[in-house]
Image (cartoon, rainbow, N blue to C red):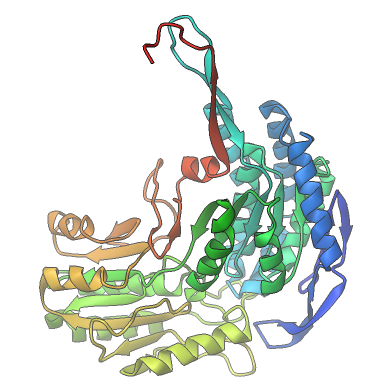
Length: 480
């Protein structure tokens, strides 16, 4: 069984430990204690992973399987993930700092996540016949080829499982590289894949930092790349992959504006914003980040936020009653502090954090800022507040940063809220709340502007791993 801080790689169905010991260290975010050194897969191992995945595509040992056979394999994987849910929850809590109560709820659903992808793949299918007047014409949806899956530190297991389930269901052999800051639960996924008897070429798991990622991204055997991460990483990957026109799905960050009008319910707004800014300890890519609030409600909203945030229980990720845990790793905690210090304005910590060397950060409000003072994501429990005059100015300020992942609106009336929401340049605009789960069945959102390439809807994520090919009998009656 994999343990916190333990790295397990998977090549051609064989589990091993990465051979390269790096200078970085993995720490327990609850108390700052050393879990072990960071590790990376050796160059030869990375090449083996690429060769195995490519052979499973070109030779057909995975990509050539019938949809039913791929579905059966994924059903077995789902069952193995169910058996490992408790361990995955603990490992993700330790690596990410997210409270165990949250990671347990998510880990318990991973098997069902895989099953839902299987159902979707069966419904959509691989082949569609066109009505061609008696001629045989088919549209095939085919796997692009080996898929590189790059996952973040804030939600390691669910992001990895979601990506690999869709890639494998589509027929793409997958190479998973988890964040070097959150490697542990990938070992459970590796063990589940072996126990489920996935064909050896279906899934490879490698470890390492930016050097390994660059090696994988640059290799022409990788035909599709899926990244969840920051904008800097996304730009680097897009630049490396664009010359060979690799398919890409990049879900990046955003400064996620929130518009609060002069007739909004201040107490309800504060409660929702406090919940949103602290979800996953503020390490949520769609968390509200900057609040454009009508000047007449600014001070009342600040007071209500301070009260709401002071009531949040801050503690170790492993504690059952913790609502806000530590940040994932020391560099991330330090980065958040640097960004806040550079903003200017008044930074207001709202709640005491546990004593000791744990990587805790008090939920922080930053006030006294101009509407254009924030132009990047602060990936932690930080909310900036910007007084503004009227809806038109708020919309302009919200759209000024060029990104467009998520946005929020709090207004006294639904029509007014929808008028504002329809004008915001974001893939998802939530009105009156900040929950994490989809707004409705069939929900989808594109990644607007610098927030990425592609979309985040069930069908869109699945289809990102496939391309179309039409094959058919020629029509002799065509004029040209």
